[in-house]
Each structure stands twice: as C-alpha cells, then as structure tokens.
Length: 97
Image 1 (cartoon, rainbow, N blue to C red):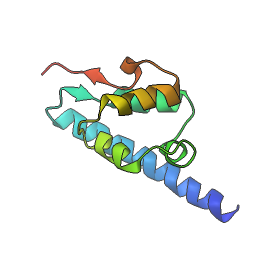
Image 2: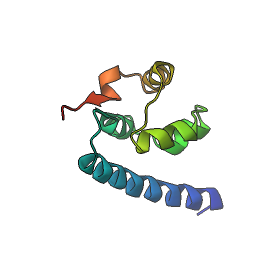
Image 3: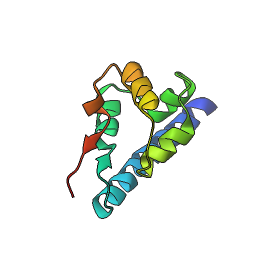
Image 4: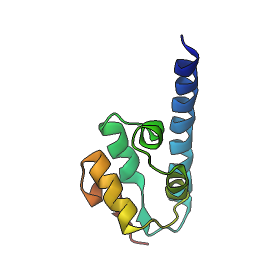
C-alpha cells in the first residue's frame, strides 16, 4: 500500500466516524435545517469529503460548518448541487421542532 493510500484510508475512517458524531449532535440539538441528506447524497454519489476538498476545491471550513449545524450561503448550496449533480433537498432538509 502506498503512503497516500494509507492516508486516504485513515481519512475515510475519520469521515465515517465524524458522520456518526454529526448525526448524534443533530439528534440532540435543536436545529431547524439539517445537512443529513448531504451525507446520504455524498455516499450515494460514491464521493468523499476528501474528494470534494482536493478534486473540486471545496472549502474544508464550509464542511466543518455543515458538520456543526452552522449556516451556509445559497452560493455554497448551489456549488454543492452543481458538484454532486443533485437538488437542494438532497443537501438540506427542514426539521420541525
């Protein structure tokens, strides 16, 4: 295994762990907008956060904000929909409190 493959493997394991942590926060929090569909779409498109950052030049800071339930701009939402070739509902959802 090449060094980059090993790093990618560790990163993938980290992402899977982070997603589980994000879901736990989401369940416990009072968020009205959820990014849960984003992670489902990412997995369905067979793409990782690593690929978004390094292949498509997507900001790691924005991914961090999404993981923590923070607001993103409609421009960012547009970029994600363009990269993932999906609809807005495949990235965010509204959760009634």
